[in-house]
Length: 125
Image (cartoon, rainbow, N blue to C red; front, side, top):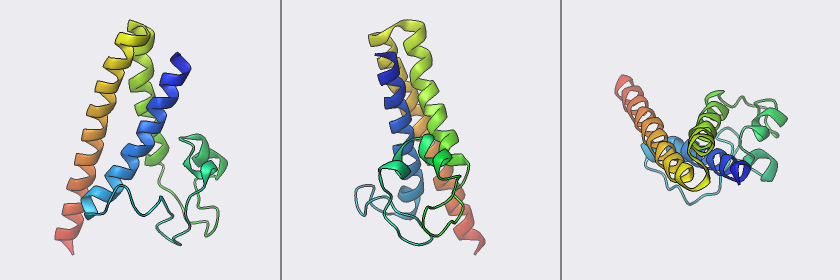
C-alpha cells in the first residue's frame, strides 16, 4: 500500500509539472497530449514515467535530444516524498489524506511560482 501511494505521489508530481507548464500560458491541461516543446513529438509511456523516464532518457527528448529541465524530476520526487512521509508516519489511510493535502499544497506552490516567473518573463520582453 505504501509503495502504491508513493507512486501516486510521483504521478501527481508529473501532473504538477504539466499544470505549471501550461496554466501560466493559458493552455489546456487536457489537450493536446504531453509533447516535447522543441519538436512536438508526443510523449510515450516511458517518457511519462515519473523520475524514471527522465533518467532513462538522460534528461533529453528521445527524438530531437533537446534538454529537459532538471526541475521536472525534482518536482515529481518532492511530490512523492510529500505522499510517502505522512504514510510512513501516520499509517496508510490518515497518511494518504495528509499526503494528498501536502501534494496539493506543493502543486499550488509550484504552479504559482511558474505563473509568477512566466509573467515576469513576459514583462521583460
